[in-house]
Image 1: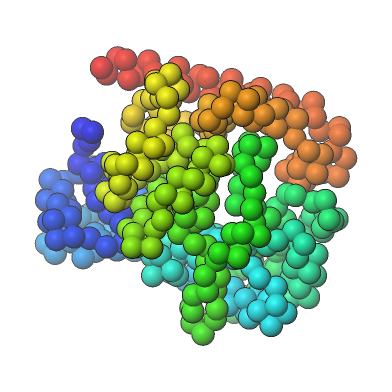
Image 2: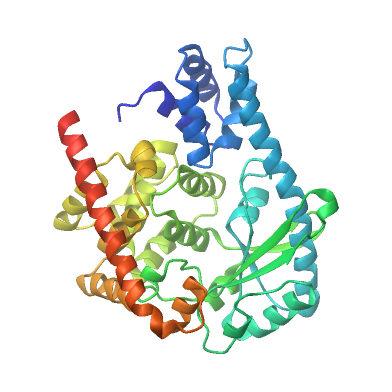
Amino acid sequence: MNMGSEYQLLFCCAKTRLSKDKEDKIRELVNDGPDWDYVLQMGKDHGLAPLLYYHLHQADRDHQIPQAIMGQLHGIYYSNLARNIPLSYELNKILNVFEKKGIPIVVLRGLALAQTIYENIALRVAGDIDLLVQKKDLSRVAKTLLELKFRSPQSGLVTKGCSVELCFVKQGARGEKGLGSVVIDVHQDITSSIRLKRIIKSDTEGVIRRARPVRVKDVNMLVMAPEDLLLHLTLRHCFERLIRLCDIAEVIKLKKSEQDWQSLVQKAKESRITSIMYYTLWYARQLLEAPVPEYVLKELTPNWCRKSMLDALLSKAVYPDDSGDLSRARKYFLQIFMADRSIDVFLVLWTVMFPSSEWLAYYYGRPRAKKLYLSHLINLFAILLSGTRDILRISSKKSNNG
């Protein structure tokens, strides 16, 4: 890929550990004098500002980076650290309580990645706490969180048949140390998007059974096995922000000796998301040098017809600028057309158009969900229309540039 110095700098810094060659490359790019305002904005948009500060602070020996830019990156880095320290403290308290009660929970995403993959909680933004629980434990989990002074606007959805994620909030927790409120999202499967729930087999019990305990600050934290973690992060990826691709690349690099690639390929086939997995791993290797074996990509490669369509949709240049320009409708198109089978495309569309009443009540925050179908369809039509305009605009831009 032909990229300007700003993009190259962003990709070089989208790593937790740098080789000597990468350190030299960053210094070279700094000396070239990139558009620092653009670098800063891209770092914010893609969740990479803490990593930018971490690496640029060490590379800027001659103080060539404008002080105002470094000042803003410094502020973002330490604000994130100030947020994550008390958030980690709150998580540790929660984990201790659940461990004593014998309720197995897996910590997802932000804080789990910050503590076990990035190994520096200042480098990874974690806005809230995400927990994975088994459906049979949901009522006990909810009761325990309520005992810990959390409150949930969806408390009425805590039933045996409930399948949406639940949100719990504690206001003013440890306010004396700068933590305003703590938000906990309780998930019952690793598929975050409703658009994929109809086509992916959820095996939460297996995910939790395969999870491994990690000792973090005198607390046992359950984290997913590498294959489950990559599957989960791939489903979260959606070609939106580079930090999510960075998560995937860092997991592959750190867990390469433990990674069972054949198991991952098999899970992708069983979940019918080989196309999504192919493009996610392709970008992780192409842009962030993740050590993905060639045979894995070959096994996941879509057929010629589907690959041609998806290549055109992605334009092989979805990062970094296009992902920031597109509306959320791009996710709908990518996730719909990346389903492996034609019947899955239909199922995804059906789920999007006619979601469950409990999901409507959760998403729109209103109890009388049946009355929301019309407004939901109007909203969906507006999103898809916006996405069509985005794709046509970008296709036209790339044709003109070509």
